Length: 363
Image: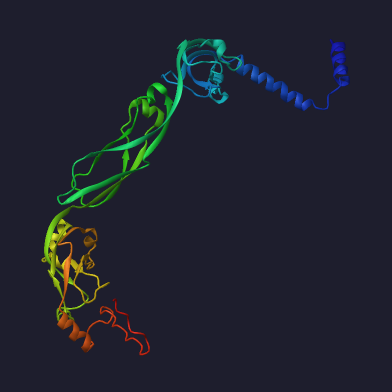
């Protein structure tokens, strides 16, 4: 016994110790730990979900039917490895690089899914997936507003403008082929007396919701006060001269007033005591001389700081022309007195020079 102890002691003394013996010792214990962690841990059966990933979809094709995007898989292995599967990007990949339009059956076998070492697949549900592939169609569909109600009394809806006015959508030909427009959900304009801006959702069919998701458009609702036609009588017609100056100049207008037909905002009619104060009529002086003329009066709307007057529309003037009458005696007297406008008087004939030949008379 004593000899055996001495022999072992001498062998340990002479045994060569490697320089990296510390790292080797750590590696040994680490391997021992992993072996115990993987092999020594109890195995369990668990249900997990594995996402389906479509790759290499041919251009111009689209899947038109709904299919399960996740598979229910029963796996067996160490609990810790199964829990760590989510971090290892385990997927069921379906390659569609060689498919044609039509029905495509996909089998979900255990060998279709690459699992981490130490985990095995016991069952997959569903065992098959059915994909319907169709030609992809792209359309720009106009967005049409759906309205409910009426504006407040005395007001009217001018327009509803949507932004965007159309939406581009891509999807299966069977879904988009029959579609010609996209409707909004109902826009209630009841009692509105002013323009407004609203965010409106779309009334999408379930198939379009899958393609577009929940979308919102902006509706610009233009509301304005109603215009009512009124005949406003006896609008005085002016000639850049007051009544006294016209009499002295030998001019007079027949008739001296006109009736107009105009579209006027309702509340402006209510708030204005005399509608004649909203208009003026004027005849031009161009070409006026010593002869009677028929002139077309020009009607203007008088803007007195009220924005409602800018919406007045002059529709008709009666009569369309007035007669400018000239009194020769008064006109001559006004010219001699210098009170007449020299621009309106005809130029006087220049005397012929003394040495000018007299005009020949026709024999």
